[in-house]
Length: 540
Image (cartoon, rainbow, N blue to C red; front, side):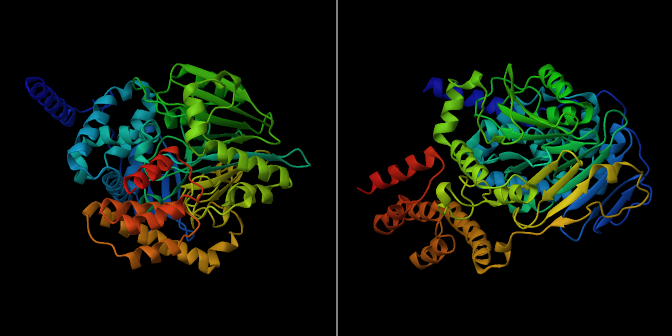
């Protein structure tokens, strides 16, 4: 009893300390930046000095930013102030969905804050200044989670945190693949499946950044994100992040998005990218996929805490999902666990099937990235992580190395058109006024105009409703459940959700009806398979 009391007091002291702990601001005076000719923040065009952003008719925010580091950050913050609040609210709401228990959520947030208390030490001051500049436009509504600069720093490590604690569901199934056509032209494609809810994904940013030092680059992410997940610089060096095998980190280090940012801004060649990567340590395992137009090659820099391995690949048939491929990790326990208990090996094998059956050109690479089927063309349903395109990913992008084109699919759940951005076209002159950056597009997938896709969109809505029912412990009828599973009948998840709901509410007859059906569906995660068996045993 005394031990329990001491433990509770210690936890209480820790939570209080972590709650009120703040990260010191970067070591420089705040710079006052004139607003210039700034448009109404509710409009689709905003401009501050030489930087601007506009929401294109396709639904993507296009942003052109230049100036000093602090100016770049402050201008981005000013231009996206309303969107930053929307993004943070969506992030916090999704966290509440994943962690509905308020007390545990407070402890988890306090733990993350304490864990990341020294994170600024691992971020270049230039990037700290940008992040600090953006943070000055963060909303007051979430100051209870930490001061604005502290929160913005930690959000830059969200990919790492979600990867390290995969039960948060922030990191799903990223896939990358390349083709080399008959003219020796290399295309690198990737699906980025960082998912923090539909609301968070609504505002996607195509950032054209012209820094004072280093190389201008084009990056695809979200408002206020100064790190990089998918990007290409003016020299034709492209980088993409794929999470590696999950590990619980021992301590904080450089967030992977910040390291990727340093590479794309300061590396001209693959060798320079490797040198930068070796200088930094990370606190999660990550695949840094680097491609170069200068050498027409692709390498994977496999980094885990304290280790860096270089995996040289054939650009004609490169495949990377969420495990490591170099010989160094053949017997690594975390790598083997990832291959055996998640969807990464399944997706790798599926891409291999598709690669062998398709011609090596741009359009067929698009077909691979849009593929929603399982191995041997089995139906997986929408949103199954075993698919190359599980449909809820943040974006899909193709890097055309020779021509320095970036093709981006970021609307209609990655099934919409791939819009082409050309690096030379964007950075060979200074923009004086906001204007459209994309040039043309590859048409979208025909499925988006079908009744099947309309039913899937309704499924998304009904899934949110069922999740709210479960959290609130409200009632859900068998008729509602039957209608729900019919909207996405090939996917295991609706059957699991309904079965779990009824069994946990004491109705084994109806619960088992759904779980018997889910047993015949492809299930990506070992933990979900175990849950299904546990629920069935509870009713036997």
